Image (cartoon, rainbow, N blue to C red; front, side, top):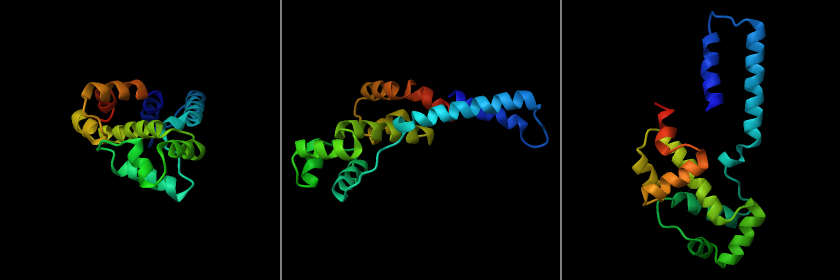
Length: 155
């Protein structure tokens, strides 16, 4: 949120308006430091990539069926392994459990949908939550904002 506001603020220096060098230098160095710091913690806002075709198939299936009632067992059956074996493979390849991947995928998709103007209810259903309270709680713990607060940043 701070970085976004700083970027908006920097637009005042576009075009004919030239910043005074000392303040602009401090401002942009601070912005750069914040961006570098954010990049170091950005794993929260990205999804890991599969290394094997089997795990890629599971991750693709999970993405394509996000709004349905997904289960680890269904994902394991997709590649003809036990849930325990799938869990070991996922941990080895993407360093997450299937449940962790699913939650992160749901939250990242929800962020996209809300930013694009989808309603909170539509978003919750689209990412697999039938309970608005559960969605709001999960979203808030992931972003530190309620879905409505997050969405208001894009209006």
